[in-house]
Each structure stands twice: as structure tokens, then as C-alpha cells.
Length: 141
Image (cartoon, rainbow, N blue to C red; front, side):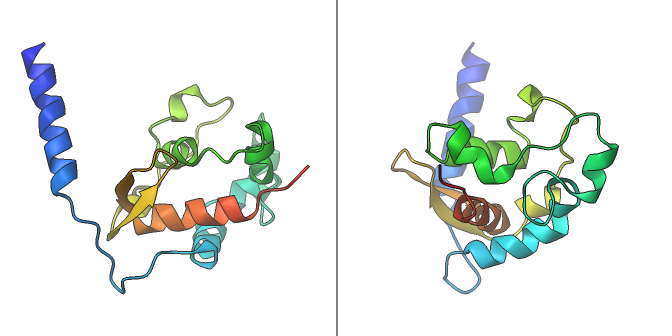
């Protein structure tokens, strides 16, 4: 039990020591994320993010329509859950084929992102860019 608490404390201390930095001081936006989406996600989710990419035809279950994330969540975009799904933390509970790991998205400089809890957490810039893009393409009812 003590080892577990010590490990958690060490992890929190490392996170607190991590200073958000960026190469040019600006936050990534949807346009940055769209380029990443086209390079990493469109092959399965489709260029329009509706789950109809070229690889989707070969899958037993089509990838989800990413323009309906907010609709599926009571018209709220679950920023923390989306980040966790992209980075792999929450992939174990996904239906169908697993998403590939995108380790490259976790490399590079960090920017502060608020996932809805009022706390800015240092997060890889590319991951935030993809999050911003996905949030920008959400359909409305």
C-alpha cells in the first residue's frame, strides 16, 4: 500500500514539475488538428470523420462517426474521454477493432489544456490539436 501511495505521489510531483511549453507560444487549433487527422485517422474514420474511410470496409465493425461524439454524450463534448481514447488510456473498453497506438502524437512540446475540470494539464501539442479539430466538427441536432 505504501509503495502504491509513494508511486502516486511521485507521479503527481513529476506532473506538477512539468511546465507547459510550446515552440511558438500559441495554442494549437482545429486547422492543426485537421492535418493530423488526415495523416493518422482518415484512413479508418474517413476524410469527413463519419466512419467511412478506406480501411473501414475491411473491418468487422465500422469505426464510429466522430462528428457525433457530442450528440452521443448529451450534447457535451467529453474532452477528457476523447483525449484518453486517442492516447490509448481508455481504449480497453472500445467496441470492435482497437485503434492503433499513436506514440508520435504523445511526443513534442506540451501545452496547457482544460478538459472541463478547471485545471490546465500539460498535454502534448499534437494531441490537443487533434482534440480541437474533433471538437470543431461536432454536428448539432
